[in-house]
Image (cartoon, rainbow, N blue to C red; front, side, top):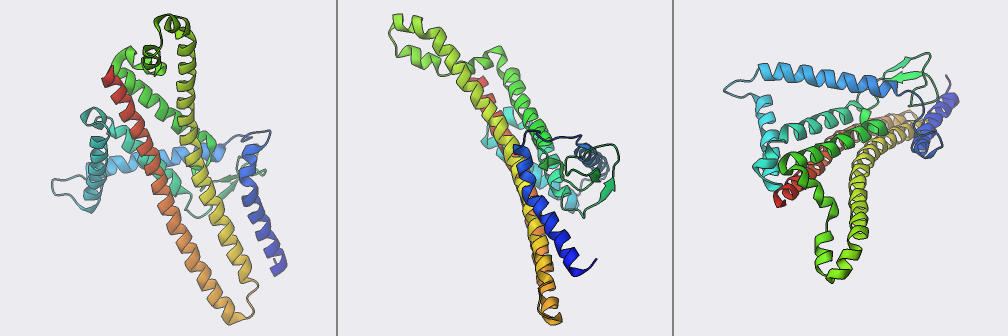
Length: 296
């Protein structure tokens, strides 16, 4: 492959990356079987399960560095639980820590070197070609982030019901009581049912917005970071081809390597931060559910 064809190939890949988000706006939303997302998700889960079993068997009275690090993370979440509802919230921390570990691991999976495998008979979601890319982070896929958001939604609804019983769901009528209290009795009787339906609708919209926010924030950040990293690295290496001489090319290449390392570091930071943000939002929703249950 000569210099011109290599550059054309690189620019074609950059163009594909830049146009990828537009696929979510098309008539066929996320078409094809998401084989790579399913396989990578199960690989990540299997690795985490094996790691959990191995690490837990090596716990000792005198903690090592890894055990001390795990304890520090656990203590940090316990402190957050104290701030969001105390003991009634802290008992659900295992669920929250599981969210954090799985989402962070899935985000960081995309930093591994690319591995592509031809896959005949399927149309993968990453491109129009039947190629399985085993380093695509599952959290860049809308299906994964929507599933996680729905799990978060179900978690705080079930916890609210567990803590407050069926009366917990009366918060969907809020603030009906306050509004009716400010109306004359006759007007309150007439407006009671329409206002109840209106407030139920508004509160359901709020819950849908929570799910949409969790879904799009996680998917958008990971997909955007993945695309921007690919475009920036691609552009840098294309620019290397225009270096005027061998010496300039050497320093330019060294600079691109440093910049690529910086992008990888930012990828690690983004992956962990986004896992933490999703977990903290779920924690706040659980804390809110427990507070509503206590109010009833």
